[in-house]
Length: 333
Ligand SMILES: Cc1cc2nc3c(=O)[nH]c(=O)nc-3n(C[C@H](O)[C@H](O)[C@H](O)COP(=O)(O)O)c2cc1C
Image (tube, rainbow, N blue to C red; front, side, top):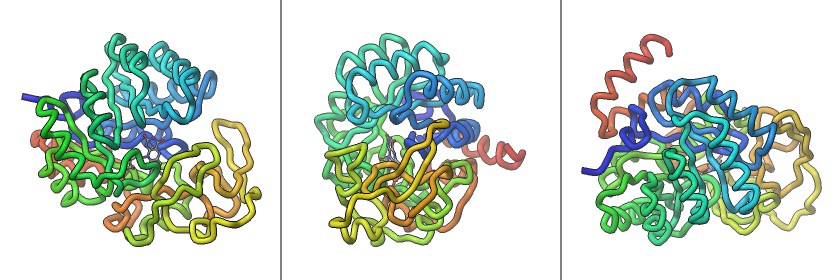
């Protein structure tokens, strides 16, 4: 029998929180892991001291399994090697590695040889089959997803196609899951659990800018668009975002529209930047890249990360986890 997500990652609830660069800081990752699911901090472009600070914070913030998300195509092979080396050297074995897109085989070998749990998000059947060879938890991302899109398939079509080819692989569905009913649909297609991005953008512990959170809770799927205009810092990918004056009029001048701070360093934000607006961003937030999945239609208010996890626990396969999570919430954890 294949492992449940909970068994594969050593957690109690088969929910993965997406490691979202800028948005998923250590507070969110630790809160999700403390609630019994798989929290994950966004590693994005962090390196050296900035990455060390985040790794120290996330391991100090929870004793439970928790992940670090890395994006091979954003940093390139050399910096990815440095990031992976740092995570392996500076964190305990309960920290899993999560990749957005398939990294090189040498990277997969290194993570597996180090005995770390491995999560790989893919958007095609071919990449999913490849990742499964390394024993990865395979996250199948459909085009309903918020953020950068790895493929062109609908979530449940991709899940079903992978399940047919990979009966023994732990498979997770991503894209458009904002409610337990939608999670149940993904499970019916063959998934063992779900990965949530947008649902955690609006968690109290997320670092998304307040305007971004409010816009997500007010939006429906029809308010999102797939576009490639937010390309500065992450070129060559389409992404699903909330429609903005920039997606509606992409011909505007590419001038600076705001400022932000990342791990203590100040940056100017140009129009068309791929960086999401965080609680450290100021300026024209309403023009920035507000990644958002079709899941937004089911999200009407900001909640704690623990409440988000508990809401999904009831439909997931780890029945014994449900009472446990409810118990943790009633004790105010
Ligand atoms: C604001 C935001 C930022 C994201 N950043 C990342 C990231 O840094 N790394 C990653 O693996 N996925 C990232 N994603 C994509 C998610 O992993 C996932 O595919 C998506 O959120 C699933 O769809 P949903 O948003 O409807 O739940 C991001 C998604 C959002 C909404």
